[in-house]
Image (cartoon, rainbow, N blue to C red; front, side, top):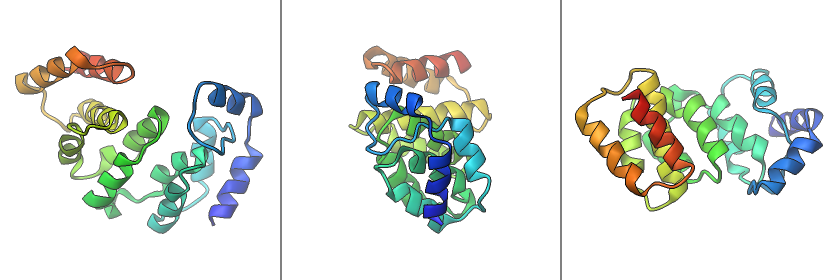
Length: 174
């Protein structure tokens, strides 16, 4: 089934977008240049399936596979160790955003997950953690309180882009 999905990515390919992503430093070896809306459309053709999603996620060289995987993983089947593994292996802000919005924010233990990830020494894992928190705040799944505001303000002192942008958005939500 992964081959069928990849054929659909190929059908939606956009060389101009792909070239722009490469010039901007996208780390993937295979970039079809599909827009997010295209990936959503393609993923909608398939039933949610943890095995298929894992196969797509494992293809870390292929941008569109990494984008589609969170859309196809049934959130009720994802355990904490898999969530940590996925969040710890993001290779770009774009993948982190899709992962948080399409999958991680729906997990019952999402608030525990962001706490586990936020102190990572890997910048993209930190970004993923705080991006997840922003999603949870927007869904009112995390209590807005002074302790959280203080934590965000402390992070803002040393944060750099793109984490800085997420932290500023969180602060606005608080």
